[in-house]
Length: 360
Image (cartoon, rainbow, N blue to C red):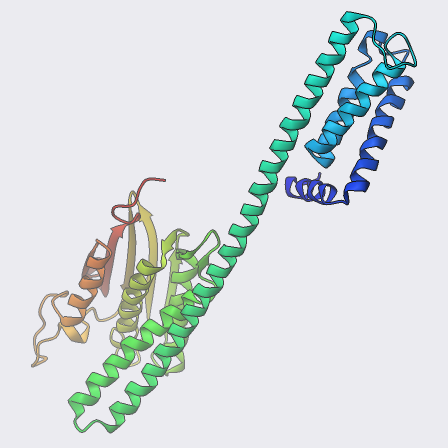
C-alpha cells in the first residue's frame, strides 16, 4: 500500500507541474468523466447527468488543486448544457428546473474544489513542517553527539594532564590527590563515551536507554579492570530498558562507576575470585540501582586510620560523595552488608520521573 507521505509527495509533484500542463490534464480528466458517463448510459438514468462530472471535479481537485477544480467545474457545466440539457447542442437552458439543477451543480462542485484545495494546502504545509522538524531533530542529535564527543576528549586530556602533574608532584599526598582526581575525570569520560555512542534513546536524543547505558558501562568497567591484571572477578549486569534524561544518567553512571570500581579493586584481596552483580529496575514510581558483591565487605574508606577496627559501612568520604550524587537525583543511597552478612550491598533509589515534570 502507498504510504500517506508518498501520496502527498505525488500530489505535490502533480501540483508543481507547469500551468499549461495542469490545464491540459484537467481538460483530459473532464473529457474522461463524460466518456465514462456515456459508457454507463444504460446503467445511470438520464437524471444523473451531473454525477460523473462531479467525480471529474473531485479528481481534478485532488490532483491539481482548487484552481483546476474551478476549471473542471466550468468545463463540465458547459458540456452539460451543450450535451444533456434541452435544447441539445446549444448553450441555452429553457427548463427552469434544469437551470436550478445546473446552478446547484456549480455551487457543489465549487465548494468541493475549494475545500479539497484548502485541505491539501494544509496537509502540504504540515508535511513541510514535519520535514523541517525532522531536519531540526537530526541537527540537534548531531550537535549533541558532537558535544559529547568533545566532552569525552576534553576529559581524557584532563586525565592525561592530571597524571602528568601527579608524577611531578613534590609529595606523595599531592600525587595521591592528583591520581584520585584523574580517576574521577576518567570515570566521567567513560560515562560520556557511552553517551556519545549507542546509549542514546531512539525517541529522544536528550535521553538515554537505561539498559544499553548501564549494561554497557558495566561491561566497559569489566574490560578495563581485566586489562589491569586484577583478580578473576565475574561482573554481571541486568538493567530494564527505560528512558532517562542525560543529566541524571551521568549521575547514575558515576555512582555505578564508583561502586563497581571499589568492588573490583578492594572487595577481593589476595587474588581471590568473586562475583559482582549490577541490577537496575523500576519499582512503582522509583528507579532502583543495586550493586552487590560477595567479597570481604569492608572497603578501605570504612576502615579506621589505625586499620585495626572498622566503623559501620556508609560513613566514609566516598560514601558521602555517593550520597551527595543520590541527593542530586532526589533519591537515597545506602550501603551495608550483603545477604547473610557476606559481601557488600549498595542501593540507590530515586524517582523515575523528574521532580516537577508534568504528567504526559
